[in-house]
Length: 254
Ligand code: 5GP
Image (cartoon, rainbow, N blue to C red; front, side, top):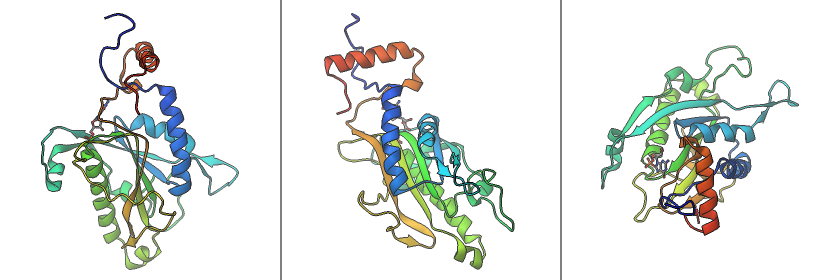
């Protein structure tokens, strides 16, 4: 293969491109959702979540002149099987949890007394929770992550006293992925995605939980394989191939 040839039809975004795109998406996410914390799906969601955090700082409750980073919680999920015609109930059998949140992390700080800012590692109850992954392909992983986190939050709300429940702010979820792949024939997984133009706070709240989920991606792309820079051992070669694809006008995201 000559230096002017590409080895395959994969799409190769660079670190810089992804960083800029995440920054642009963050502005929208901040205005429409303003997350209190992130749940990153590992390993692909870790790098995007870390970059996103740079753009999603919040003023400190103790000193509004200071900006605070929002917490990132991590879950580990692995999709181990591709089965066509899988029903919703079967999806749970295909996704393996390698790491999950414990009950205390879901509930956050409970009981009397004010917790010191920054020491609440980010309970989910009463918060705006942004689930982060690098790519939404068949949507199986995201459906699993969202529905299981929702279940955990519902259980935690059920364990509150009537008074605590009364005083609890709504819990809302949103999803961020760097790339959303458009699939011919649709996605396997499903999500109750809210309309893009729905104003902030206009979603329906039922028993302390939003009925829908806001959905963000930096790009909707065709069904191609994406090589992420953080997966490459040779980043110089990755960048060379990315520049070559651009020069040749092939393997681009549009
Ligand atoms: P799902 O099919 O559940 O939406 O995606 C499962 C996982 O497959 C993703 O989180 C991601 O790790 C991986 N995946 C799917 N498509 C791609 C791709 O084009 N490139 C890379 N690097 N990983 C992908």
